[in-house]
Amino acid sequence: MHAKSKAQQKAAGAALAAKRGEQKKSDLVGASKDMYESMTEDELEELASTKRKSLPDKASKS
Image (cartoon, rainbow, N blue to C red; front, top):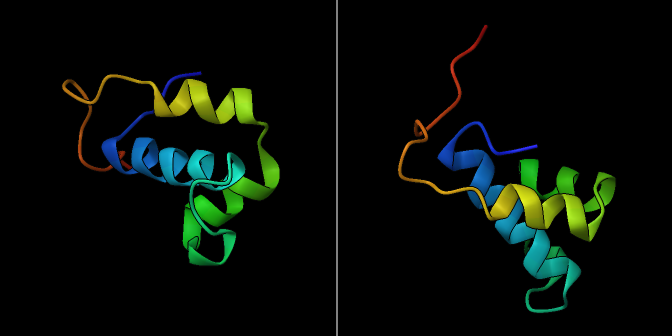
């Protein structure tokens, strides 16, 4: 699964950093906190590694 927006990619990166111990879990808020609790490190890595160049800032509501 690839990130659908830059915001999702950034949130996944923050959650991944917390999973790896590079950032405090208590610093996470919103989507990144939810991702930390519900996704594995491999899933987060896949989302965070999505290239940002072609992504919209935020996903459109559909």
